[in-house]
Image 1 (cartoon, rainbow, N blue to C red):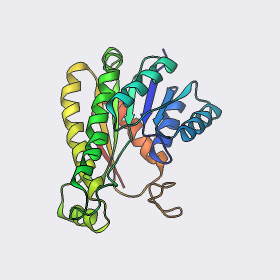
Image 2: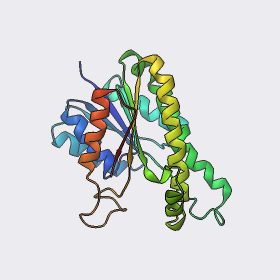
Image 3: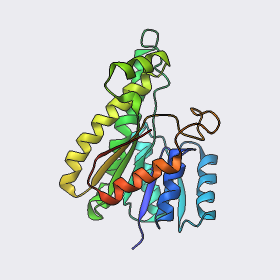
Image 4: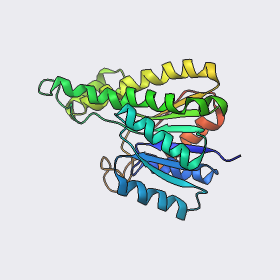
Length: 230
């Protein structure tokens, strides 16, 4: 029986590596993002690398109705969903807390919390029936430490830090609740820049393939909720 992973927030770096890793393990792969050209190119690249099935579904991770429709479209194209990988993030609207528009903070939580919950609810019948999984990408700016708070403030990443902290708490809550349904939840926290993204310079940074390997280990073992890579 074939399995399907839906990667939400598809782009270069982590999500591409996770899509490729799970495709190599025999999964059908659904890609969700707002950029249609990026989605089409990503699905084509996966098929060229041997993915059994790869499909793209446009969706806005911060809009519950949009993300639910994208999950439903991916299911229609690929079949029942076994895994959701949540790689979407926001935070750019809140850099300096003293000058940011407070109303802009809502968009942070729409992506970090609201959209993720909506995606899970849409896929929940499949996840429960197939004892599936939810895998979440997170970042170290969400750590509750004075050093990381200072780093977030000094680099203008306050919004990202707020999103990551909220997402980390949500992962724990989801893990506790979905365990009752036989669904696994796992999070990989990335403490550093990822090669191939705008945050990394040259060949410096963490390999997307190494991060994808951490996600695969979590998924395969289904015993630990959290992993960290630096």
